[in-house]
Length: 62
Image (cartoon, rainbow, N blue to C red; front, side, top):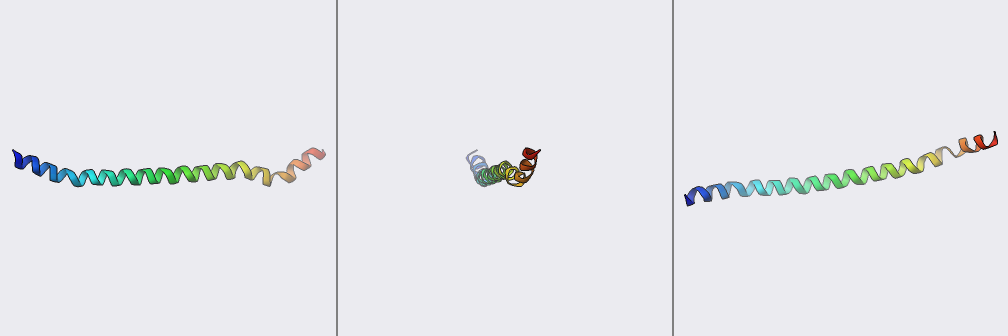
């Protein structure tokens, strides 16, 4: 019985470490994705003001 428990414990340790590595990779990927989305949203919010300056001036003249 103790041998079976030992075998299960030895086999479970690499799986737990693999899950930890995957969890860390998941957090890192989520952080990168969130950062990229934030940058895209900021650029999207700023860009129309830069591009449409001339169009806004034309509308005001009319």
